Amino acid sequence: MNKWKILAKKALLGEEISNDEALSILECRDDEILQLLDAAFQIRQHYFGKKVKLNMIMNAKSGLCPENCGYCSQSSISTAPIESYRMVNKETILQGAKRASELNIGTYCIVASGRGPSNRDVNVVVEAVEEIKEQYGLKVCACLGLLKPEQAKRLKAAGVDRYNHNINTSQNHHSAITTSHTYEDRVSTVELVKEAGLSPCSGVIVGMKETKQDVVNMANSLKALDADSIPVNFLHAIDGTPLEGTNELTPMYCLKVLALFRFINPAKEIRISGGREVNLRSLQPLGLYAANSIFVGDYLTTAGQEKNEDIKMLEDLGFVIETVEEMKESLAMDKNQ
View 1 (cartoon, rainbow, N blue to C red):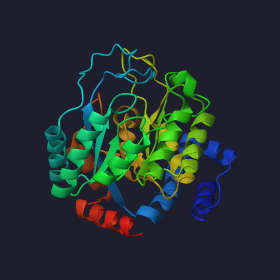
View 2: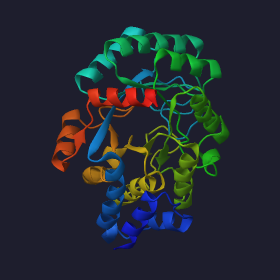
View 3: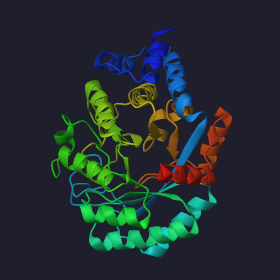
View 4: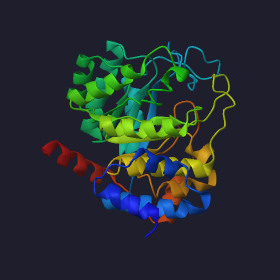
């Protein structure tokens, strides 16, 4: 039994992955990558079999953000030529939900730029989600920024299942990425949505000049936060942002990152998110041996891969897409527990 399978067995037994073991995953030799992914797949298969969850984003509010996040084309310091608009109306959000339902997308993600939502923004989302639940029964994830307690309670009451607020990077590296809010602000929002009864979704962006130790710290921080869903984004550096021209990632390293998150968070949904197409490139399929979830379609201000290409990729791998009906059954079970 190779060292990676020994480590996988340790993860499956619920034993802690040490810092040195975690770093060794990121430093795995490239000629051992298949052995590492085979071990990660043992963990993934134990908890999720060959099922893959599909997610789709609705960019409900674009640009106009006062924050200074260095990776983001929507921030106040970005000069990227993106489309900017205020919160769309309820009908537009419902149209996106209809499309998600037609495409058999299990989770519909309503995302809005900005530091946090106004009460008017929350009103629009609440009204839309109530109708989405009635008409389509989709799993709904909201991502609206820093929340107030009463806003979180309203979203929960409307039927929002999950709330996304990424930590993005490690606590140590946070001030190198943004200074308009703190790492603690982000953690507090994740804790707040948990208190409101919403499933916490929180992830990272890898490739922002952080160290390998920072990446390990991110994975462990999300374990401590007990995030149910962990989107792993790989930086797609956009011209006009402070991180313009940053290109630190290789497909092999991205695979090692996905394996690391699976070892440290064995039972959690690990989602290959933004930047997978440009960073994993031809090795995208291999990422699903560690991850069990992907975004389909476009991201917030960058284009994704064609849905048909994603479906072909999953079929070629022998993976099975979780249907909307299976997702509904899963939600019903969660509510009864």
